[in-house]
Image (cartoon, rainbow, N blue to C red; front, side, top):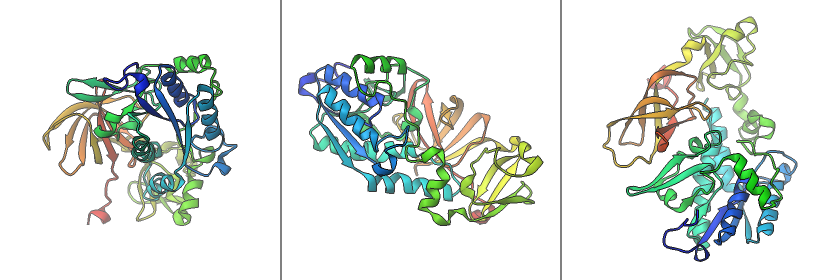
Length: 375
């Protein structure tokens, strides 16, 4: 980490650190300051801090902004707080709500990294004359003769590559990830050594703006008409019951179907937003070997359109990578053929590509069109 920017001494290198108020970004700033870099801390206020002050496990609001300021003061670096509430609402929260209305299962953390945390904050860092933007993500940036690559973190239990698949090559040139080689325990020990006021602070939850994990409450606040009732049907279309809004259901869901004795044997197989139907069936109906993607971000170098690439993929953040073949298309879409069937592949989630430790990119899983839509 002593040469974050090639051919420049640390004392001549300005690094902006994205500080969320958590342990990871705080240790990132402290490490770089200790090594002599010209460190500037920047925190983005992303949603109403008044409503989030007492919310545990949040980030980028309330107490967390105050914590970032205390850390900056402790390590002796300047610290700026920028209000990005409107951009976060437009680029992340609204998109999150609309995805549930479409019967999808979104990943707001990817959108946040893709927009306000990398695209917008990178612009701020460049305006401040920084040579690089550093974050506390657990992922590795590897420089090779062929260019910069994105690799999984050394600590598999903390690896965040699934949530960073949309990082572009241009962004990767400018970004730095000082914690990529560390374990979480090592990071905690560094926080204690630096005597940071957040050394014992719990990790933040993934969806920072969803109180108590009740995502439907957030969706209804933004899209009040999203709770329109409809039918729960089986694979043959027979009505088994009613629901109070498709936003309460996700692909693969088993609990909370309210279908009496049959509930334990049935899973959500599909969601049809046009018909306002939740389609349920046995677990085997969730199995699929073909996954269609759009808005693919490719980090694997030059390939010809339509070429088939053997790789591994993850279709859920907590699942291990599995063998697959990938066909990239010229329009930014792709088709993935899995070597073995996966259960519960959900539209709105990401499919991320790997070649061993290297992250090749990824795309967004698409919902299969209904017969009405196809017509």
